[in-house]
Length: 466
Image (cartoon, rainbow, N blue to C red; front, side):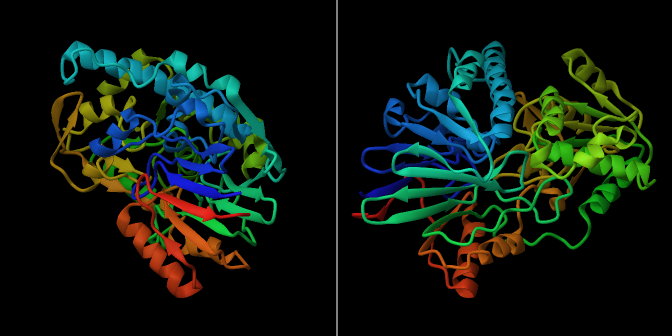
């Protein structure tokens, strides 16, 4: 048996995670993500898939962020009908996120048509709500730490990765006629001291490793992230301003709610209203009770007097009319809204209304990919385009990197050191060129790893005649 891999995404960039493994008689994807960020990356979502989607026989997901699952409706729409394996929490989060994505894509296409700012005479959505729903019957939830078979020659096991609820390090064991080979995909690795999620599981051995490199060139500041968050909020409130926090509905929003509750209870920030303006984030937060075995917060959630997702300061905003009312807020308050990189969602309306006011502040709490509005705001641009309009940036912009869901360089190295047997080869994935290069060199120098930084659409023969 010969085994090869083709990098269909997250090679030289942090989005569009898709790795096509070919065993000759069986082809399957690890992840099926959407490209985000720069326009040239987003255009790839519209490119013809490099093989007929009906010929892909299975998809194995690491977790439910859109850059890992967001292309699934398009793949299914174009002919894929095989099983999609994932953890149970990933399956439920995927349903929430994909439905929302289908709705947003329909609305964006309609809005572009109405306002006439698309180059296309009749702009179409990449996929619809109906396309998203077609994914659900294909989802096959699996347990952590329990091997499952996706082909007579392929066995998969999920281990906790941290990062978000349900996220998994994925071990793929390929059994050839002569040899057995182990492939380990890190997925996105979380932090080692996250108060919500378990730390990434150490894996003792692998022939080949795919390791994320999002923060491969960065070490988080020693300051506690909640203190950095409090400093930003207090700075905004010292100007009688409003704090807007763009946050991913999955993971960052729940961590934010936990920290904000703690900061208010300890008197470190004023006792102000917190508006969670994201129906998707509200729905995901409710899954934490259902999947209590996947996180460390169960004791907190069971104490109704100290529930960070249910307290008098926290207001859930589900309806669009309620969201619009927040545009007129004049009092000190915190608005949490998606998306985390300000690429879409309700947060765009809040930014449009509140960026021009110098008293206000925008706090970014996660990685901002190249080409996103979030990255441009963090980089200090004086104006930003939203819904075809140029919006002046007078509000102060803060970047609390310590709240990122991604392991920093030290934590990536700690995970890599967990391999007691050195892998024969490690692919640097899910990172921009600089971060991937820095991590590759560090792994080479300190651990003696043989590292490769793959290019988009590059293929590698992994094993011959096994």
